[in-house]
Image 1 (cartoon, rainbow, N blue to C red):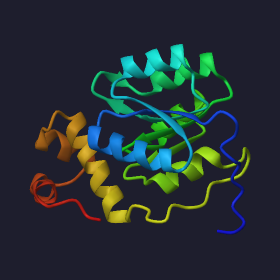
Image 2: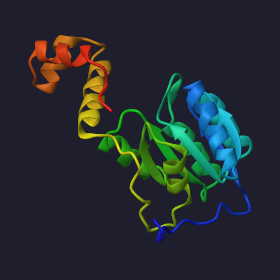
Image 3: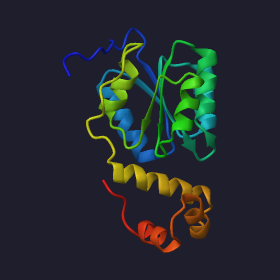
Image 4: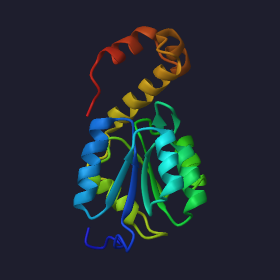
Length: 184
């Protein structure tokens, strides 16, 4: 890890965190303050857009799926107000299409939850044109599969038969998977 190409935080350490998971938001805010950022938090798209408009930060970490909408709306406002901001999009539902959309509208990086403060800091401070180091604890293949099944299940309004049809799997097999705890 000695050859990491991380930039210093810089003269403007302002950081906006947007996430509707309150305990996660508080933990991440404390961790980022310890790393030298001046943190402001928002628990909704509306609050995130208001802060991005009034006080556009140098850095932002935005959850993709929020109760009142899509976190990419906050990213768009931030890009308009502060084009040089470094933005990381977080989500519990990692999908290539969403990652592409996030990067196209200006996100610097895209991380799947659970991402820790070190992963987020590395993504925020990695120099342009270089890749951040791989995460210390990436999701296992079993966990990625489980997350995908859960996402499709939610998108199908928790309809087991429809989810099984779309995933091309037997309904009883899907029920067994859904009944188990998430893998690590």
